[in-house]
Structures are given as C-alpha cells and as structure tokens.
Length: 575
Image 1 (spheres, rainbow, N blue to C red):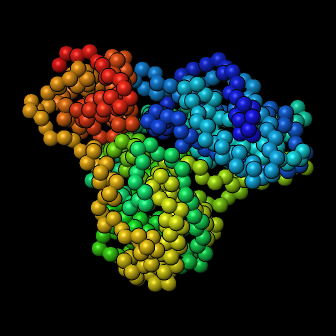
Image 2 (cartoon, helix red, strand yellow; image 1 turned 135 degrees about the vertical axis):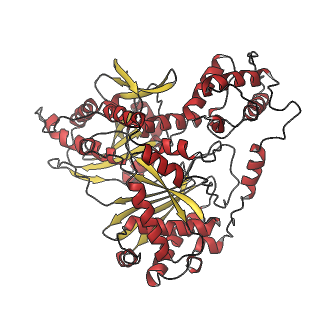
Image 3 (cartoon, one colour; image 1 turned 90 degrees about the vertical axis):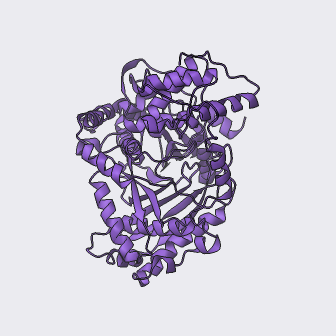
C-alpha cells in the first residue's frame, strides 16, 4: 500500500452523529452546491491550511481540541442537501472527531506533497463530514497538522479562526482543564437566515439596483489561450511569483487625483492593464473577494462569509495610469459600500451571458490580503509555523493572489493549466511588475505605452475569440429555426415545455426561448433537472446552468446518450 493510500485509509470518515435540525442554506452555500453538482468528482472548492508543530506533542490532546472546535461551530457539523425546491444545511449533533496520525518519512517536502494528494480527494456535500484533519508525523517531535474544509462551510478568515481555537484549546485539553474561549454569540445559520430576511424585506434593493446598472451588458473576458479548451478539464494550475517593492506602490498611491488609494487598488489597476493588453478588451470585470462580515459578532465564527465584488473597469480611450487608478478607486469605494448583496444575486440582476462550464460575470480573480499574524495561542515547548501549500486546483482562468505588507506587494499569479503554459504565467507575473514600475516612474504614460511582456510576446486576441473558443461558440449557437417554429416535436421537448411553464410560471414556452430570458435562475434550473429525472429524463446540470433553450438541451442530451450507447426516453407531456 502506498503512502497516499495509507493516508486515505487513515482519514476514513467516521460514523455520522444524529441530525439535529435543518435550515435553508446561505446564498453562498447554494452557489457552492450548484458548482459541485456541475463538476462532481473534483476538489475545486477545498480550503486548505497546514501548521507545523515542532516539539513534544500529544496527538490525543490535539484530537480532543479538534472535537471541541467542531462542537463550538455548528457549520463544521453540517451537510448540504437538496430539500424540495431549495438547498438546506443540515446540522448534526456534536460527537468525537478523529485526528489520524500518518507517518511521513522524507521531511517537510514529502508532507507538502502528501497534503497535495489528500487535497484532491473530493467531499460529499450530502453525507459529510465537510472537515478532514490529519496529523502528518515527520519525526517524533515534528508534525504537520493538515486541515481540509469544503468552501461551503469555510473561507480564508475561517481557517484562521479554526487554527487559533485549536491551539488555544490544546493545553486545556492536555491538562483536562477549563478553556477560556468565550461562548459564540451566533452561529453561521443565524447569519444565513438574517441575510435571507434582508433580501426578502427589500433592504438591499438599492444595492441590487446599483449592481444591475453597473454590470449591464458586461462581456465575458476572453484571454488568448495557449492550448485548445479541453472537453473535460483537469482544473490544475501553473503559477509564477510576483514581487513589487514598497517604494513603487507608495509612489503610485500618490498618483491618483484626490488620494484615498490603497495598495489593493493599485494592484487592481495594474492587473486590469495586463488583462486588457493581453486580451485586447477595454471593458472587463475582475472579481475582488471581500470578508463579508459586516458585524463584529460574525468575526469569531467559522463559515462561508466571503463575498465577491465584480469590479468593472473601463480602459477605453487609452488613459494614463493615474487616470485609471482614480476610476478604480471610485468604483471600489462604490462597491465596498454595496457589498452586502450576495454575488449570486448580482448575477441574477445583471443577466450576464452564461455558458456551460464558465463562471458568470467574473472569469478572473484578484485577491489582495493584508499580512497579519495568525494570532495562534502558544503551546509550551512547541514551535508553531504555518506551512505554505501550493495551488493544486483553479476554477478561474486566471487568479492573482497577493499579500500587502506595508506598501510592498508579494504573491503569485496562477493560470489554468488546461489553457496556459507555465511560460505564460511567468509572463503575466512579469507584466504585472513591469506595469507597476513603469507607471510609478511616469504616471502620465498612456496605458498602451506601458511595458506588458505577455502582450508583447503573444499577440492579443484583439477582442476576437481564440480558435478553440470560436469553434465552441459555433457548437453552442442555436440552429436555424426549423419548420413549425417553436413547437415541441419530441417527447423530451414536450416534457421540458411543460416543466418550464410550471417552474417559470409562464403560459407560453417555445423550444427556442432562452431559459434565463424567461426568468430562469440557477435554482429553477435545478428544479427542472430534478423534475425531469423523476420522469425518466436525465439532463446535464452544467449545461442547464449556462444559457440554453429547450431544443439545445434536448439535442445535447440525445447526442450524449447516443455516444454512451443509451437512448433518451421521456413520456410525452401535455403541451
């Protein structure tokens, strides 16, 4: 048995405890559930943290501390299930949580490699558990604690909460003493219910209206890929480091008229320049993650709070970097003041183009975090040190993960290995640094004159589709309307017409009507998939989440069934 197989055996899921209660999932959890259904069998949405502990350690006390942390946070004992027409978070009773110990000869490098392997194991959202921890033993007094948590119950700030509480509870558990952690004022489910009430009451309508107007007509970002887009993606990443000195960023913060510019705004402006020069598009959206914890009572909780703000940047007219920076500042300030709206509702209000297998609104992400201590509790005789784990999966085409230390910016750029070579990631990282240095030296320089190695070395798409994407678009384009107009012609089409009428609550549906144009959304797509399955028709959820008509979905389903040697069947429904 290999080391990885041994570790997987050691981390076998324990028997689940009694289910206590069920509540509607949060908007973010619904999105995670949908993404998992569309790409089942992957580990794209696994949050990871690793902590090296050097010194005498009692694994049993650490296991008891872990059990206490899971008992404190209901969300770590939750699973997500389809409940009627909605997604529910089901909370289970507290119970013992195992912390398997796996021997890892070969030192830290071998532990990091094993952590990467274990990170690729998917979670089962319906069965759980959605937290897996393993203690990797490098030597008698040298361990690495690996925590893997599904994103639906955790975010980056939550990982810090988990590690802080785990270290704070270790010594009380070691000495069988009372701990000093305060009782949690809320649970994640309370936040989810509160946010749903805010939306239902209309309290967020002004914010929703802003996002609908700001994002109207947004186009998908098309980066010229090095490789044809594969039919089945591996979701792996190629990365390159970024390092920008503090004087460069500090100078640029003084560039924008009116001031008020942060290091993250400087990074966003430079990233937008690189993306624009590389793609040939002057109107683009960059996703900007924010903490999503508007109240202080939410700060000590574990959960999926993080929200994504789609910042739309206009680079038309070839402005100077200083002018662009002022625009980025203003749009970020506007967005921050309207950050209560869940990203899922922004998508519904903006009505962007949707395509199977693509994330709507933002195909790229810029994550700028401030460098702050984790605040781990000390453990007598044990040295604690976070372990950096390289990216193993990437759901976006491009992501820039940066850390702000004073005014210095460091981090890395990651690109989808399905589409880009490692050399391109290095060029993008160099371009980001080059734009910032050149703009710092001459902030009045037009954007087109700033150095951008990825654009100079690789011809930009000029707004046109890359060859593989053009082929894909032709495949997805609706066929010319046949004789008979939009009337259903097959049993499958008759069934979907009836289901669309019922779920979308419309009286007339044609087989060429577009689902989202008729008022569809992601959850309504799930309802149709579920209802069709009950009638014997299996529909592809990933295609249903993209823009589609009845005829397109049925044609795709029948073609897939034919390729698999099956025949699609569905009883004709009343038209």
